[in-house]
Image (cartoon, rainbow, N blue to C red; front, side):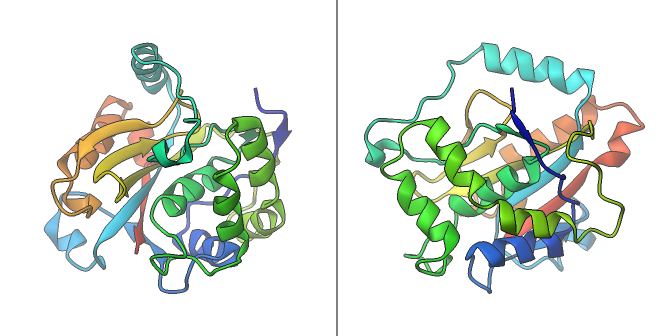
Length: 240
């Protein structure tokens, strides 16, 4: 169980973009609103490619039942002992209400690197990712993530609505879907699950708005939610 709590992030692409830039993500990378996954009139103006999608959705009984079924069907993820075997970065959420931070980290750590121009060298996030190579346990990685608290706390105060308290039960949760160039696979990354969920190979060069496995999974989450909760879904895309 999480031993620490933080103020949750608001689902706002400018907040996510500013936080990402403050951590060292390059200025040309940003988050944008996604108003539809299937309506061409609403998707045509979105800059492409979208290399990651951040989904905010309500945690309800239907999702918790699905989560339990899916997690029980596979072994809990363990960090490979050899860094070369770690194809995807996934972090278990051990800080209450920090799902927005974990979703951002899942999105940018698997798409942006100093090598591809996505991260500023020697920035806070570039340094963290460099330390992951020698950090092969989740306890130590949680401590590394905790070092981002200053930038996160500032971002959490920038919302347009009154921020909840750190210990509040908010009932909403952020997760990420990412394209991983290391193995050309698509992943669902949720810090409340027991590991990364491999959604199979990319069939659209990693543009997630064209990836059926990603679109179908998000739509499934919407379909199993009740009518009231369906209004609480929100999507942002990472333009990289």
